[in-house]
Image (cartoon, rainbow, N blue to C red):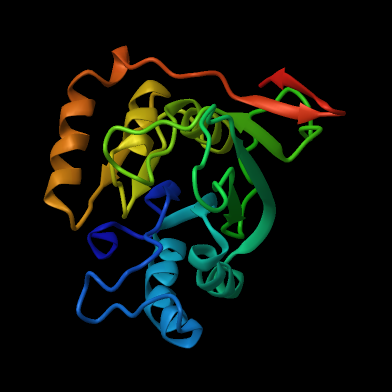
Amino acid sequence: MLDLLDTGQVGAVVTDPPCLVERSPDAPSVSCRASAIRWVKPIVRECARVLRPGGSLVFMGSPETTDAWTACASRYLSRMAELIVLWNTGKKQTIGFESLHTSIHWYVKRGARRTFNCTTRSIPSNILVCRKVSRGHPGEQPVGLTNFLISLLTYPHDLIVDPFCGSGSTLVSAVQCGRGYVGCDLDESCVQMTERRLEHAELEESDPVYLWINGRMEVV
């Protein structure tokens, strides 16, 4: 899908890439780091090509997912920040440990000043707290979180791209934030779920996102 986009056409690529990518015959398990990097590298290279100068690549997930992406992104883009998201799940794990956090990595394309739609030059915490949601997709991200990222790191009318759109939160946020969008997914059920959500994207409610600052939560 990325190869269909023009160079410099995209304001941001925002995605939660798959943790295990062996669904595709030529895509290895991320347990083999060298193979994972070989698979991710052309994707990240295309992301860098389609981004406008100052545009952002934002990807999230567990260390097993993001390791290859950070290795490849550092070759083509400038690293800006890593955010930690704490999930306020309100549930107990009966066996083992519950995963209560995820990481978000932000990179930008050189050549122009980055977008940072904030009243100050910095935000006083890189730890966010929000409620985990699920519509039948295990990797779904809350719309409040994707709204925060897209509104902060892109301009109005930018094109937002998610090459692994899953349940469609990134694309719903693009609509809510007044951006254009392009997304795809290999799973037809995910595409159908995303299409249903996009039909009423403006009406979808989002939970608040908090910053964890000095031992307390503050609304973003």
